Length: 587
Image (cartoon, rainbow, N blue to C red):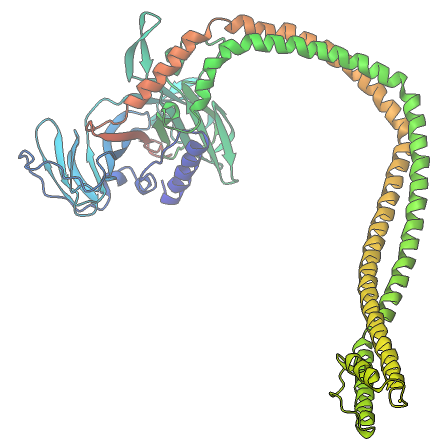
C-alpha cells in the first residue's frame, strides 16, 4: 500500500482514538506505514551489547520522587487473515529523572537504538542497563510471546466463507469481519467469588476501501467517512468487558467484533490497521471521574422517583395555573390598554421636559458667556481704581507740603490716621478745615475702591456659578433627551404588546392544551420508563461498581508487554497490520 494512503489511515485512527477518550499517542505509527517490514527497517545506531552483568547501579540526575516512564508500542505484522507473522516492539524510555544509567527489564531480542547513540548492557533475568547520560532512550526489538488480545479476520462472498487468497479479484456481496479475543485477565474476588476480570482493551480497526472497487459500504459498531475516492471505515470493539462487568446483553450489549459489508467489483483490500489500548479505564486518564459518579446512582434512584412525582404534580399545577391565566386574560388586556395610555402621557411629558431643558441650556450658556466677559474686566477695573487712588494720595501729599504741614507721606494704609493727627493739631483753623475736606474726599474714594472690589468679587463668583449652571443644564438636557428617547421606546413596546394581546390569548390557550398533554405524557413516561428503570437497577449497582473498580485496577496494572522494572511507570498499546489482498494474485 502506498505510504500516503497509510499515513491518511493512521491519522484517522489516531484522531478517533483521541476523540474516543482512549488516551495516549501511537508512537512511530506513521513511520511504520510504508510496508510490511518498515517497522524493523527504521534507521538505527546500534549500541554495543554484552551478556555480562551490569557493573554499576543507576545514578540519578534528578528528583528521587520522580519516575521514569516507559511508553511501549507493539507492532504486530499479520497475514490478511490475522495470523501473527512477526512482533516488533518500539520502546521510548522517558528519562524524567535525568539518570545517567537507566536499569530496566526487557524480554526483547535484537535490541537496536533507533534514535541516538546510547549503549546498553544485558544481564540475567532480562535485566538491561542503558548508558543514558541523562537522555531519553528510543529502541526497538523483536519478541516471541502470546499477545494479550488476538485479532482474527474472516471473509464471506455472497454469504459463503472464503479465504482472502480465493477472494482476490472476485465480485459480489462481501463481508469482512474482525473478531477480537481477550486473553489477558486476573482473578478478582467479587462478592465472595473469584471472577475473571479482563484488561479492558479498546480495539479500533481502520480499513480504507477504494471506491472503484467497493460500493454500498456499511459497518457494525463503527463509523464511515467517504472522501469521494476512498471510503474510510473505523470500527470499535471492547472484547471481554461484557464479561468483566457481568452485564446481561439484554441490558447492555458491548461490541466484541467489527463487521464491514459492501458490494465488491474485483475484490482487493489494502493493509488494515488495528489499534489496541487499555487507557480508557486507567485511573489517571481524564473522564474516569464519571465512572465514580455511578457510586451515587443507587441512592439517586429514589430521588429520581421523588422528582418524577414532583414533576407530575408540577405539571398538574401548571395546567391549573394556565386555566386561571386564560380566565383572567381579558383583565390582562384591559391592563395593557391602561398601561399604553400612561406610556403615551409619559412620552409627551418627557418630550416637553426635553424641550424645556434645551431652552434652559441655551439661557445658561448665554448667561455664562456674559458673566465671563464681565469677569474678564475685573482686574482692569480694580487696577485702574488703585492707580487713581495713588494719584489722589500724591496730590494730597503735594498740597500738605505746599501748606507747610509737616506730616509723613500719605499711603492707602496710613492716610486716615495721618490726616486725623493734622486736623487735631490745626483745630478750627482754615488749614485744619482743603485737610478735613481732603480726608473726606480720600475716604469717599477709598469707599468706592472697596465697593468696586466687592463688586468684581461678586462678578467672579457669579461667573463661576453660571459655569456650573451651564454644565448642569447640559447634563439635564442630555438626561431629558435620554428620558424622552426611552419613553418613546417604552411606548412603542407597550403598543406592540397591546397589538399582540389577541395573539397572547391564543398562545395561553395553546399552552393550556399543551400542559394537559405534558401532564398525560409525564404519567406515561413515569409508568413505562422511570419505574421500569428503577425496577431494573434497584439494589443491583453495588456489584456493578465493584466490577468497574476491579476493571480499573486491572487496567492500571497492565502497563507493559515486553517487561518493565518496578521503579518505572508505563503504558502500552498495540498496532496490528494485516497484509493487503491484491487482485490478480491467484487469478
